[in-house]
Image (cartoon, rainbow, N blue to C red; front, side, top):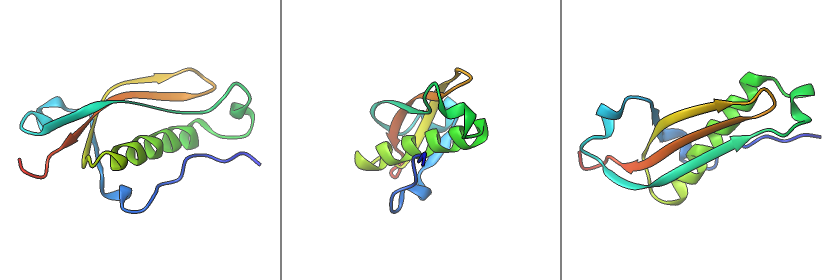
Length: 94
């Protein structure tokens, strides 16, 4: 059975945004790359599910470093997988 990334505890509260203006006053933490899918998964998992799983991966990684916001710089869809490039931020004091 094929599994996709599931959200870990409390990571559902992490904001995912695509407007840089929303993180201008926030503390930058790190670059982030998330991905889901392999050459064979498109036979079994829809692109929508791959996209959600890649976002889950992004939120999980952000939660591990204490980020509360992820700014998505770029979305790379390859037909068989989904990859996001982004940045982690702590916006709790902004």
